[in-house]
Image (cartoon, rainbow, N blue to C red; front, top):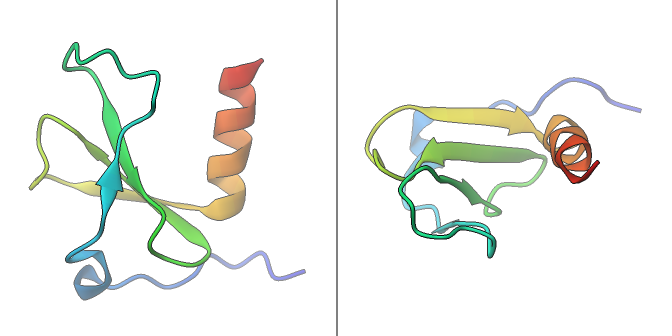
Amino acid sequence: MNTQPASVNASDLEGLNWFKSSYSNGGGVCIEVSKDLVGVVPVRDSKNPHGPILVASGAAWDAFVDQLKH
């Protein structure tokens, strides 16, 4: 199993399709994620779409979401 995160360049993050959780209530404290890249999940603050983007490995994102569910 390859545990190395995929390499992501700034240009890879341009033009992504972003979405919020269906549980988002529009209160302004949301994150947005993109499913456009293979093996990684870009995450950004919905209030600051031109700000920094955190890129998590797919496995790390899955573990994070799993912990939120429990």
